[in-house]
Length: 115
Image (cartoon, rainbow, N blue to C red):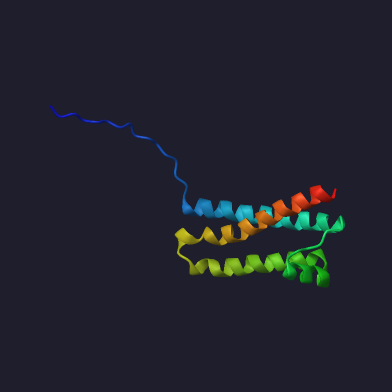
């Protein structure tokens, strides 16, 4: 006698690549603001920017130099976006978000230590 195994069908929610990419760009915006804000607060507390490119931008134009540097990074990312197939496009904002999120974490720790 043959047995038959029945597995229940599961409705697993899926997320489209487009939705994932939009979510990643939202994280870019949040980490952009977070990094600029925590950098500014840290500088006000007497901390120094450890990134040499960021430090040069801040020394030449203040916090607006850092904003300009990040805007340039986002512009390059947006310009490169069409070069990738749609399924790989979330990599671009993720590549901006991850280091900026790390910077926000480091900045926050440094601010809490200095305060």
